[in-house]
Length: 617
Image 1 (cartoon, rainbow, N blue to C red):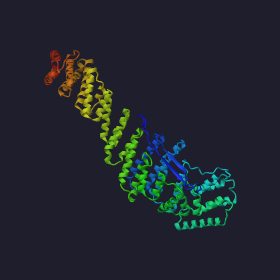
Image 2: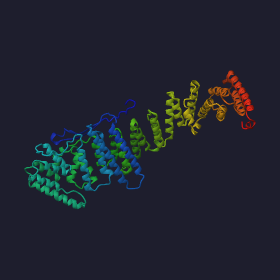
Image 3: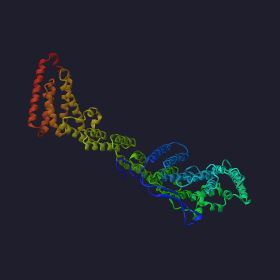
Image 4: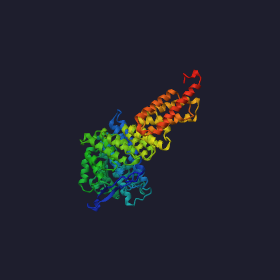
């Protein structure tokens, strides 16, 4: 695992090999064409961007499902958005010179699934065109397929030139094949011009009626066959071979199968020239015929996925899909589309909901194991069934919060997800964290947010204990701004009121005089309230009485109203009776002396003021 602060490792262990047997080399030998090796590595920048981008697509898809409209068209549109993100990821990796990643295979499988299942069913003539595009896209993979582009001015003596040309024809890339012929040194000769004309005259399915297109196709193939039989290209064996492919000669396809990267490319190539109006249902039979020859290897994961799609076996497809990438991204998103479209249900795939839930949850938990992706992981887990709510709450609480800002962000996300219990748990954990660091002011802030009365009371008591030791209340400013939040705990209310008392007392001491009678009265009233409230911890009672002695014995203060003094003395006497063991005799003596002295001063003060003001006093 990664060290703290870094993203843990993601194991992408394994390899995906697509191999093809060459008839020229014997049935026992095979050569790897595509090798996708993915070793343990961190989730790097491009992959994080891909995950974030597809998460946005996922949310948009779920939101769009709530709107009315053609659901199949909606699924097709969002499937292409996912595939576009896959293409961007693979292009980004290729531009950096990185080795082929498993998501290159995912893109290929996704594209085929889109053609055969997710998109509205294509017309037969359109289907083969889409399959040719798919096979060509996979063949042009940087995993090992050489680029079949011509080099201008190439004299064509290199055999690879003609292999590339033939490959383009087999993949249906006619324009590129003609461009190669024109770039050849003999491009303006009669045979080259005729071959170009043959290729460009190939009928393409468009708006034609099926029978009309089939008639044109048969006539074109018959023309090509007659040219071959008439030995028109006797001096150009390469054109002779291509023409035999064009009219669908099984023998010629078997002879040139070594140019195909994989068995499924060979299936598409053979179908394009032998069954141009191929239907989806015909693919399985054709694939089985090709694989029965034992000329191609089909034991790899990619081959099995493609074969299950061609057979329409979505149960096997989803089982293989779940293990295609160790992030579970593919299974979570593609199965989601198949489920929403009803494709899994219509093909009687068992336990569809449980499968979808498992894949989505596994992907979410995988993201949560990566610290930079915690928010995305929570979003996916939130879209699981309500039964996963306890897991979601625990996942939120488990997010590593290295700073207070991070904790506030996580708490806000929990609030948006409708998880108040997780929000309060985060606040509580932060309070405990700051308590352990002896940061009592920060601990109090988080404790108040948590609305946990026992925790708030404990922090408030610790602040009072710290005040007794240091003589300074470190959170006075925070307490002054409390409103209804102080109602969380009696200890907090006591602490807030006591902080207010200290402020008023200090103001009275610093600005003693007739003009500050109101402040002195409020301070005395607060002290009276605190002593009488029984909110005080036992260890703080003595301090309250000491404050009373100090307030009464301060010569700078204007003598108090006798009514206040009488109430204060009654309150103090009641406290002494309730807690006699907590008060020392010398403190009681000081308290009695201060009360008696202040009473005498108040009487003298009353005798000195004008008669008309006595009633007001």
